Image 1 (tube, helix red, strand yellow):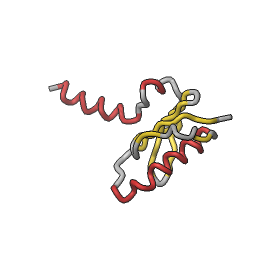
Image 2 (tube, helix red, strand yellow):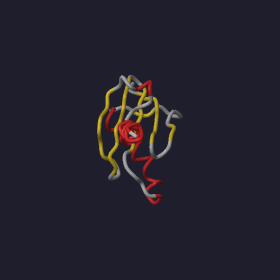
Image 3 (cartoon, rainbow, N blue to C red):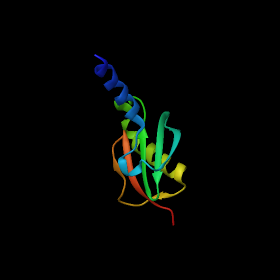
Image 4 (cartoon, rainbow, N blue to C red):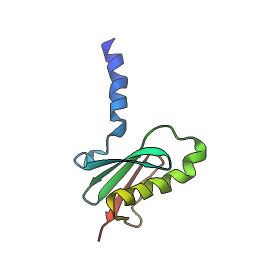
Length: 97
């Protein structure tokens, strides 16, 4: 029985974890478009994770808000053609030059 209680706890704990290649990066918590997000950065790689439920009506504004959070937190532009993901997790390469 213990294992069934432990599994949901692991799932919840993993909700703010970055992709493995960003695990050594720096995390910054922000709010954008009314949603809590965490921006993870390691070198020129970046990932933003949105937290919480987002209703369908908010979907069109989430990707731009998440991309804006990347720029605000890192102070760098997103390298053209590298932004990928959805309204839950976006990844990109940065152009800080």
